[in-house]
Amino acid sequence: MIPTWLVTLIIAVIQAFLPVLRDEVTPKAEEGKGDLALRNRLRARVKAAGWVCLLVAALLVGGCVRTVYVPSGEPVRLRATIPAAKVWVLDASGTPTPGTMDLKEGWYVLPDSTPE
Image (cartoon, rainbow, N blue to C red):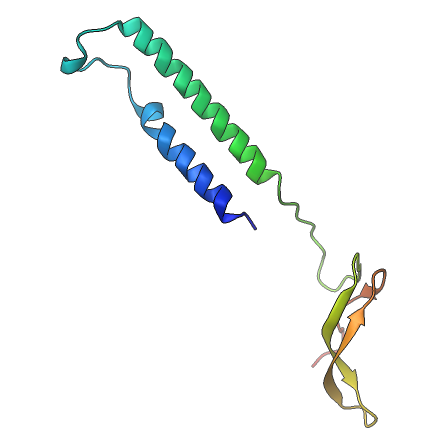
């Protein structure tokens, strides 16, 4: 899950650089004074910095999550103990009853393959 502070930071960066990234470099009537070449160079630097920030943010968000596909019905080995896991246990008459137990690190778990 992506932390909300990181999403907020990325949105703020995008909102700050989006107007600069989409604006064309065209002088307006009130911008008649000043050096147009200097303005173009500065806008190019801001655009480059914006793309670098977006790239770094994408790498940070994209590199945080790793997904492993396990086919349905395949057993898996537990990497850490799961304390007080809710399980079904059979009582003396063979009836499933709810219970809890610790599933220890290194144990294999697999789905029940019997039809309901």
